[in-house]
Length: 314
Length: 259
Image 1 (spheres, rainbow over the protein chains, first blue to last red):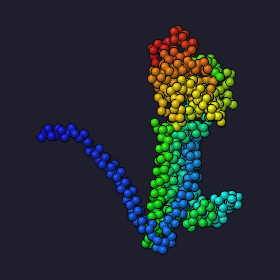
Image 2 (spheres, chains in turn green, yellow):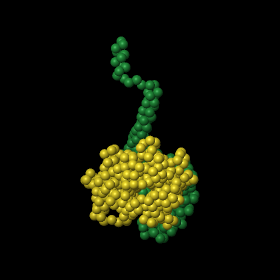
Image 3 (cartoon, chains in turn purple, green):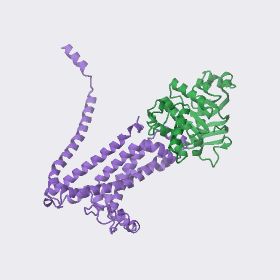
Image 4 (spheres, rainbow over the protein chains, first blue to last red):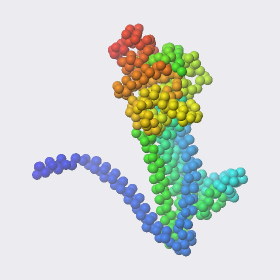
């Protein structure tokens, strides 16, 4: 009896109840995430397949699923990419100003204001987009059409309401700005002092120091921050649904009154009135959005991974 | 290339705090000057004031004059960026840019100074600088690999190569061997002997033997007490400083009787 006990004691290292409880809860938390994700993916697939296979006369939109979803994917990507193109440079500029240029007190205030932007609910952005931004942009679009109309992006005819994909993108840009800025600021602040001094000692100006020491160090962080922003821009529903006057076309004309819709906004706008297989088609479009977001994150990881040797983490 | 430095009555402040007081010292061209002294005596601060790197800290300022071949580094129309392009610096810990290859690291300063460079010209500069830093034979086959993959001693020599690639007038070294093993240290000390032919070198060190080995002139810094500013106690030819110093504090420090 005693010998059995002693061998048993040798084999298993003693565990404390606290350790076991903590381990249990963290494993449970990790599994919950996986289970939720799997559940959502499963639901989308099972419910979506009939929608994908439905013939044009069975659904309200009256086309095959591919014809239905392609313009939506296009609109989603267009709005998100435009939003990022506007938001990333501004976010990096603001973050750099806060981390390396601004006097300490101003930097703190500015940081709070940026964080506050993230706390505004998206429906409020939607209201702002419709009632202020869209109206304010009407003359700008008119001017763009007259002066830059030869570029397909601004071919016009300019929308009279201003509720175009460009307006929606600007609203999205404002919404993703705080996320990207806050992350970039944190990363910029972590730049090793040694590298900054190395650059300055070579005779770098502040901007050159940023290019030599800060940006290379922060590169993967900037990409991750942008991808988080992109994730939000792709999935944002309310603001786009409110601002955009959509008609399900594929066009790169950013300022006209016929605009491609986005997947999320389209689901929000049509789900209530949808029945039968139309609902399944909408769910399938949700699956497409899910995959799109997944791909984006995957691509971001690949980019970060590619130059790992040079990342400064070693 | 290789200019002399003349410092007169230099006070260095951080805000209202006087960190270093009344330093007057000449530094001859093409010589090695070592600064020794206990921690916190202001020798690093003083070294940094020679290329205005101490200004990186908010509120730092100086009174007095630092003349490099008669040109005042603190004149009103003097841009600190230009000062630093003229006076290179090597830091305590090796700090190659981790995202750049070995060759890009060497050329980092060059790229700031001039906009465009031919490929052949760039290759020449990389080879010449790495040869001067005694690193060429070790890295010539992997110039496109990251500099952070080298050993500590190699990284420090890479930093020296980076600093001399722009052919500065003066090279400042802030305890360049304190993070290195004895063998790497001796390689760098040999290198300092070589570099002395072309550059004016000022080195801060905690290692008295190192000061005795590498320098022509030694300057001893000390502080009167906690919260007091650091001062230059005495300076002179290294042999004399180590055999027959004038100030009893210098003698005590050199012989290891305090610190």
